[in-house]
Length: 335
Image 1: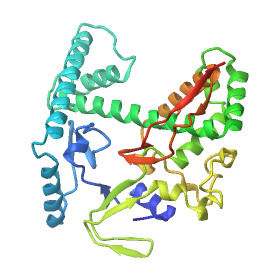
Image 2: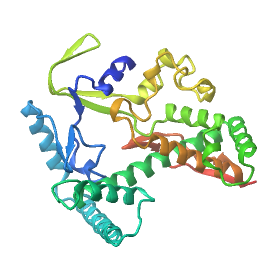
Image 3: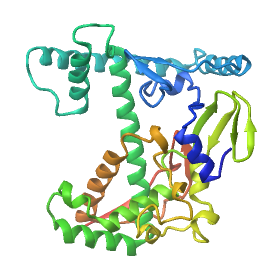
């Protein structure tokens, strides 16, 4: 477990090329075996990964993956759902490809851009570009990763603003000052300082992904310690985000003011804020996610005030993402 921000930054930057992605289980890949899982050079829709030399570790991981797919009721249902999703996406992609071939423009969303770019790259050669299966996996990944993470971010934001009505009111006044009751526009969203500070602080306290994993592919020295090949490195984002030595004595408290001068000045180490990871494999959807979260939060603040229900129990729980274990019971009052 690597908790020093400088060492974490070294691992994520991967300048040596020997800190690779961890092996993903088959059950995890059901969510979307796309760009987030790839490690190495993607060529013609396929992935060339560095060979793992520690065969004993591979054998254990393979055995665990097999165990995950015993023919239990839950596993059978997971496979059934996966087949349904593939069927739906294959039909959608087929219609889009047909429309593109008929000269219709379909580049106004992610799928359209992906398909048109792929067609230009492959130029009719099936061996170039992505396969239909590759496109399906990227669609699954962008959907599940994009909706789940932004959803839990907004959930924790509403919870914390319910706990801190003073910050809720400050955010509302900023939103009303910029937009009134109108639909927020892109340029003004980027100028929302208080809302941005709040979202950053929520991401610090309750990052959707609580840890990242990497793997050494050769003997590496990190923080004065030598690690052999085949070592799994855990990068505990949530621990780093709550470290009082980095964030101060109030590290466990909700204080958006710490981000008043931006991310780089919020902590003692510039690399200590990692809700989207870091290095060349930093989340490619971070800007969109923050924009989406700002839009949704502004819309809510314009129309409602909110508070926690007495039935709410604060119990952060990590299952792929960090979410309230017993739900978020919130009372809304129309303004």
